[in-house]
Length: 429
Ligand code: EPZ
Image (cartoon, rainbow, N blue to C red):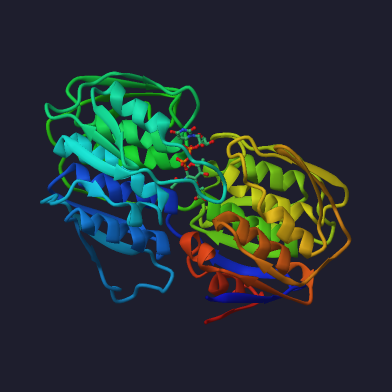
């Protein structure tokens, strides 16, 4: 298994290109199941999760063609996928595939809407929590589907098609909103989705569905209204920049000090995180090339943050912020309200000398003068990158093990950081 070695203590200066958003790419690829025509996606990041989803879609008979590099393309250019679900040959998503990449469970909505049936393995839990899908199932029942649980599979049927309905989510769920939205595009009649997730990735998927002929209003607000149509067509859509990658590198620069342009980043996608970084002492400037982040020698100020659905502070940046706060001049508090077990990085940060006290969903971080490099273990995608952030400012060498977690969500992380002066390298095997 690959490992990443980091010799800390160097500032970051230069430019980091921001890739297309993983959490938009995955549902956008799944939306291809809604039409027999070709869907073309630009600015797709090169990530393990994208490759895994290509395999899963292939199992349903979907053709995914990855366009080669065009002359003049830089290494950082996102890739273009041409996806065609002309003939869906299998409406079953098997356990061995779904258990590897949870978001693949979201194929259930489009398969049911287009084929009238879907048999999708329950994804099972993961490192950060039990990750139930009860709200996704309830949403589909609200659109007229008949759902049975059989042998670990969700078996959904709508032989006469779906009918528009009023879906009210008791709590904000990104996956639930994606599922209801995609299924509603082909349902007969009008669907209203209340307490919908407002994440930018929802809006990006809705923009693509509208290009495909869907009739959607209100994406990005808590109430989305969908007029069902008989059929969707192909389209071409460019994936929006990854706000979590943007926030992650911004926190890395705030941690090491330096001056970096996050190229292609859009501030409105992560304003709450940028506000916290300014409070912590970083200077943030929006330019027409992206976001410039500077942190000079004045040190890191402590903050108190609670994670929340968009537009609140994102849970996917919680571990990264915690890493930054380990070296603040004072005591910080971070409360995690979205997932029940998203503090796996705390024990690993403690190995680097961090002082963090946990009390249920609340973490209290007492800033320390210095961190010292040590071997650490990545446990989940965002926790692993928080270890990288801490290691960049630790004295001596840190070895981050199990970096396959990193490769799921961060494209060429070590290249992007070493291009800005970090002493970081991947050790294969
Ligand atoms: C999406 O996961 C993201 N994944 C997650 O990012 C992100 O952390 C999460 O949204 C919250 O923003 C993708 O977009 C691929 P939820 P999702 O449904 O949709 C509970 C990353 O690191 N819930 O919004 O699975 C759930 O347990 C990943 O990129 C139910 O109870 O999250 C959680 O407590 C990690 N029943 C809360 O809702 C359900 O049926 C929010 O989950 C569904 C969810």
